Image (cartoon, rainbow, N blue to C red; front, side, top):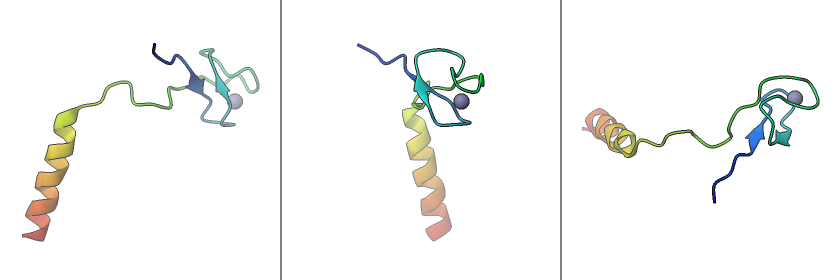
Length: 52
Ligand SMILES: [Zn+2]
């Protein structure tokens, strides 16, 4: 199962629709559409660089 739930960035309402039923704004997925595992390591590298 996967969630199709979306959230209105304007009023913070959760909905299954692409458009907020309250304000009519376009809703967004509260979860990142894509998670890039490499991102984490890149961040780590940058942090390590700054520290060292
Ligand atoms: Zn809204």
